[in-house]
Image (cartoon, rainbow, N blue to C red; front, side):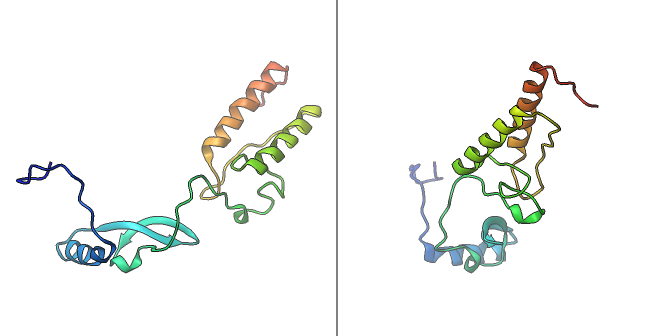
Length: 139
């Protein structure tokens, strides 16, 4: 609830007022953190002015891998991913091929390029499958 107004209604600032708000906050010594476009993605960092805000950019939920950070990374190379439906379908085919002729498996995630949670889940599921089918764990 706002002090003295008796109202708990949210306050909305028009886009045109963001510049004034940012200027006042910076002048008062506050650090203003907001979204900016960096390398084709929206990231958070300190703003000098509201002009740095990514007006006109949409927000897309979900993870986007960066396969260009390491040669052979991604579905077109030596790795699989499950972050999109087509990639998941391709990974399922690769998994079926592995089940036909099991062998060494490398599971990992690259910093800033992939999702480590999915890699951990794949690691645990692969380890469970191999242990249930009599494969020995390597140190």
